[in-house]
Structure formats: structure tokens, C-alpha cells
Length: 260
Figure: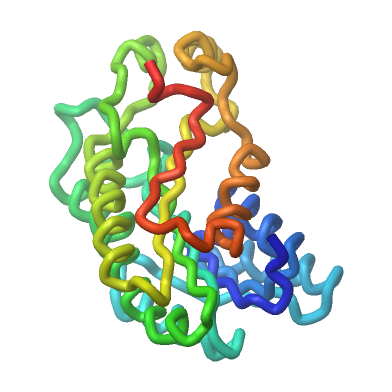
């Protein structure tokens, strides 16, 4: 499980899951480049980590709506780290993203919001994996981890959202389903020098309305929503040599949600 000296590029480093992933990699000894459009948050997190272990983290600006920015961010991270061993992508549009025509009832969802989500969640993941391929191949321990969702595999249950202002945009599930196939494609295309796997979390607690929270827990075999800590073991496993013979796999961390 030791990642000492490994160089990790973390896309979405300013987010909640990004923080959990960064902590996991850092605790196992990796040096990390945090990529996000929210550069200020990434810089603060990088400073905190480097304050505890000098030079262990840096921040790079990345706008996933622009292919050129995504490619430049990967190039910049590789230059700062001196190479790359691990690429983790946990950035993307989610149900709370504030975009017109996105997190609204189905009839109000727009093609423009759908297309943006496909680009940010799926196309950008392809672009960055392609850009990082050469460095990861040279690593000898190359590992890519893409963050999906249970909605890459199952449809939403509309009854969960009744009486709330929450929505489950169709572009979210569609883009995550695309990422599942991208995982499989890259796993066979990048083999044998790079392993490519996915993590599919279930719902992660974010201060949701209590009616939604209770419905979600009732439908989950483990009777609770996830927290970031629940994902750290999966990240450690797939990023490290513990999973040296695992590729093309989707590790579902959902408390049993998809087991019904």
C-alpha cells in the first residue's frame, strides 16, 4: 500500500471527494498535484499538506470545459511532479452544480447543460488520460482511477426527490455510464503498462433535506449515506500495488444500494 515517492495527479482537488482522495494519497506518501478550476482552494490544501511534509503537494489551474486547458494542466502537473504514476479524476458536474437547465425537473433540462456535462464529466477524462499516457507508461506503476456513480449502472428513483428541490439530471447518469465504458476501453488499450479502474460511490452525505436523507437510508442495506472516509480504502487499493492484477474493474462503494 506504500505510495512513497509516487507522483499523483488529482483532477477535482478542490471538491469534497477530491479532499478525501488527496488525504489518502498524501497519507500513503505520494506527492500530489491538485487540479481544479478553483485554484485558491487547491493552493490552500497544497500548502497545508506541504507544511506537514515539504514539497508534497502543488496546485494547477484546470478548466474542464476547455480541452486545451485540461491538456495544459496535465502537462503542467507532470512538469511540476517530474512525471506521473497515478491519475485520479473525481471532477465533474454533479446534482448540485449551478448551471442553467441542469439540476431541474426533466422537462426543464436543456441540451446545452447536457452537452456541457458530457464534456466535463466524460470528454475531459478522455483528453487527460490521453495526455498523461506517456508519463504513466514510463512509471512502471501506472494507475488511472475514474470516479463514476451508481447512476452509471442504474436509473434514479424519482420517489426519493418528492417534496424537495433536488433533481437528478439525465446528463449526470449518461456521462457516468460513458465513463464506465471509457474505463473498460482504456484498460484494454493502455495495458499492460497502465491499469485503469473506476470507483462508483453511492450517495455521499452533503447536508441534504431530511426527507431525502431518510428515504435514502431506508433504501440502503447499510442504512446510511457514505462519507468521504468510506472511499479512502478503495482509493488506496486501486492506486497502489495491492491491485497490481486489477484493471477494467468498477469498484462499487454504495452501502449495498445496487445489490437489491
